[in-house]
Length: 61
Image 1: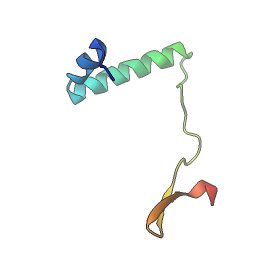
Image 2: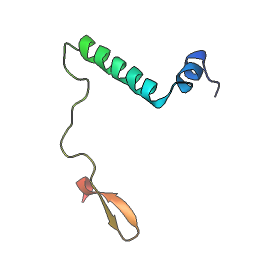
Image 3: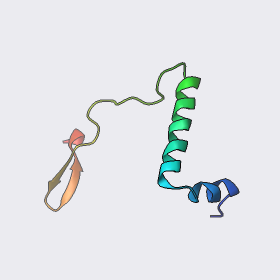
């Protein structure tokens, strides 16, 4: 897959700069959504237990 100019510029950023970009995008998304976050926690999410050499999702037991 070919990288775009935007991808190349983003990959050149430091971790701190990438974090700042992500936070800026997040603030814009919240502003465009009427001040509400786009996603909210929906409970406890995935809880993994190691069982018989593997991991499984607790919600389907």
